[in-house]
Amino acid sequence: MSATEIATLVKMMEMLPEDIQNRVVEHVREYIAELQDEVQWDMTFRRTQSQLMAAARRAKQEIAAGRAEPLDHNQL
Image: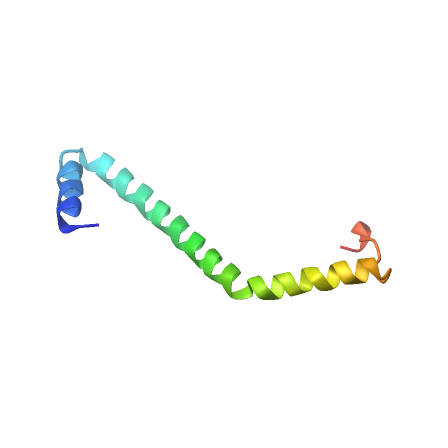
């Protein structure tokens, strides 16, 4: 975001009543926190994707070899 875009947002915010400004700020904080969570999830997934794929291949091999057992939901 350029300095001009930031200045435009500040001017827009200044035209709002203070209580609305506070609501907008809180909304933006929550939105940014959600975006940060998504970025963290994406980074974690990328780092572990090869491990997840390897585990899936092993599971498929175990199923094909008859070594897999159905999940017992009562033991969870």
